Length: 307
Image (cartoon, rainbow, N blue to C red; front, side, top):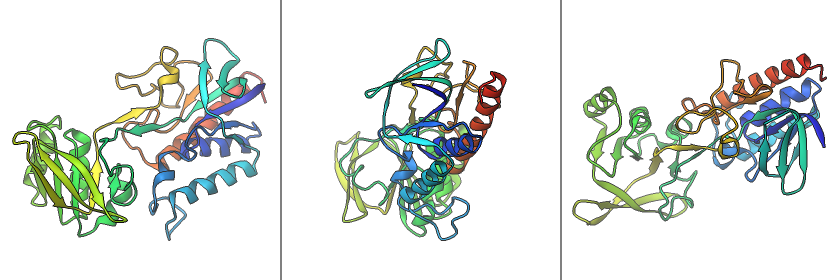
């Protein structure tokens, strides 16, 4: 099957790319993948996406984005891409169902937050467990908050969360931190922040929402319960770039390397969203990147005399 443009991924980046490409009459083929909607589809309340002053559920937002993209001619299929060959054009994309040939490609496969892997974590995602302070901090105004991690992201998000929580504890398995000296200084000076070193979370407990965690002190081996309302986990993200290993330029963490117009190292292949953005990681910025990638893909195809 030969296509002008394929998009791998169905989060805000992929669906926005699909909308813009469809309006350019490219009839894009979108591979939805194993989890339609991406990370935001697991979020219960979305209150910071423009145009929805009353907020809405994450799955509702992605459903609306899908409806809009399909209205203009995007074709979204529930297939997961298993192989990609970018060695020559047309590029080849393989799924368990078929093999597709495409003249251009937008990669919007995103990144996955690295989990703690403790009991209760998955159960309470969106109900006290979060991987995004900017997305969910507002819901914890006046609440007890725990931030897990020891790097820049953990300290940046902990400082942000002090705007809302009555106390923010930074829990880290070591007594040294990877965060920069300035962030460490700001955290130490903030009266709302408490550092809890040499400690891990053994279990996250709750009843409909998070109520407490079980701490384990790694020096003493002792366990202790602690009441908490929100657990924010910042132990890293894993870009979903394994399919493109050895074919596209990546940084040391596996994020795709792009130029200012989202071109990857292979002409005709573009990236959008958290597959290359390791900094902002917001639905609205991913949507913006999706728009940019689609506009660039349209220009590329026009240059190849493919309309």
